[in-house]
Length: 111
Length: 114
Image (cartoon, rainbow over all chains, first blue to last red; front, side, top):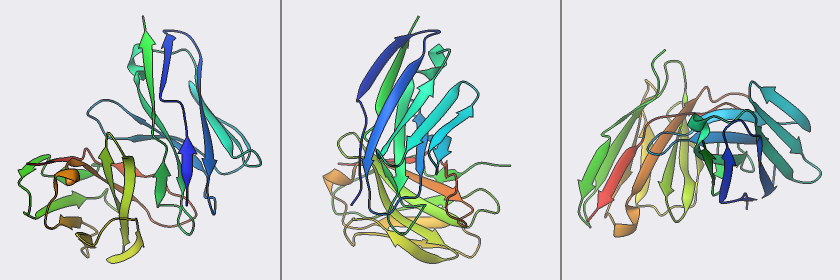
């Protein structure tokens, strides 16, 4: 089966940098993806890593180390609107679209 | 391009009843996946449909079923509702091809079982 671990809560101030870690165990690997979900909203895709290394998209970056079964999401220049839940997810064995999600990290950005 | 739409947005049912939820994917997307989100269990995969065929299935009882139509719209059905079925049901669409597709989620249907 698949399992992912990420911190339940992270708090930071506006303008700061925060890193949300994710470790995973999976049979078959179809990359690590990250989703953002605001309260009452739908999850929205942030990034995807299939290979080791860093992917950068604006203020957000995501890193993957397949040998360590580890990844992280880095959020820079935090803004109040970044307060949300962040989920890491992996594709299950046999399917890239059968996502197994972590339990989510609630990020609170303080003024 | 219009996003993923789900109807209804809110639903209240009583135990033992059945419910049907609908999802319209983004135009051109042939894959629709369904997820259940609860505070206790988080986001859990229910099933995926591609070209009217169930391609993957999560670990849910047979009371949960789905189907997909030729226009890629999908429905999921839950029979004999239980209190524990109260959840946000999300569908996500993608092109369904290749080793990975970004999934686009709809706003969800909030189901309350009394």
